Image 1: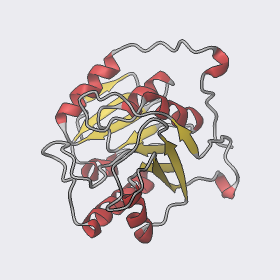
Image 2: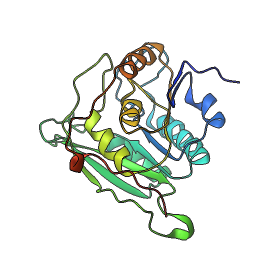
Image 3: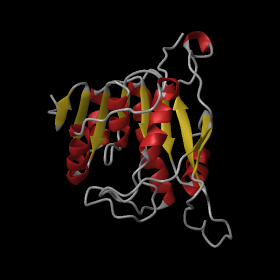
Image 4: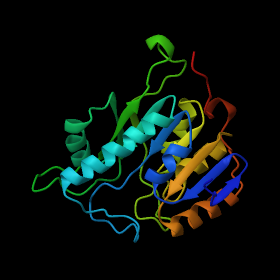
Length: 230
């Protein structure tokens, strides 16, 4: 038995290495934002500067583990370099784009390009049973500015996760939970979700965020519509 760090109202957090915990959980969809191998300081439990071959092998094995425990798609946010490197080893089924209109990422090596976007590689099962089109739809370009830092070096904006989870149905799993944005979005949408995080201080931040009651003040016609697979 693995004891949850937090378990309340359908939201569960496990503190530990996702490679140890993934075989013991199940979900319908994975949405996650692993380290980009950019040398950022995420805490003692994370090595964010590996040889690219080691990084790609490590991440591909984790994606394999995610595919084994979910019934639907696996959305993995990556850097541009990460996507190029990982695709040669594990080709995604589709690539979505997070467009950041007012922001840009560091230059790609010595190139002149300042990326205003990040890729999200899609793995897992993207079709319904028998290869049919599923009963939901989602654009593959998402326009959201970056989030204000909340104690984590690279938090995703709530609006981005609300758009993604609002379109794709089912229980949610995030094996690199960070500050818990995926779980906060799932809570807002009334969905069950599991988060896994190796750094305990981010677990603490996530629990505090989940403890806040969130009210959706958008008009009904602007709120996400949840649907089921055919």
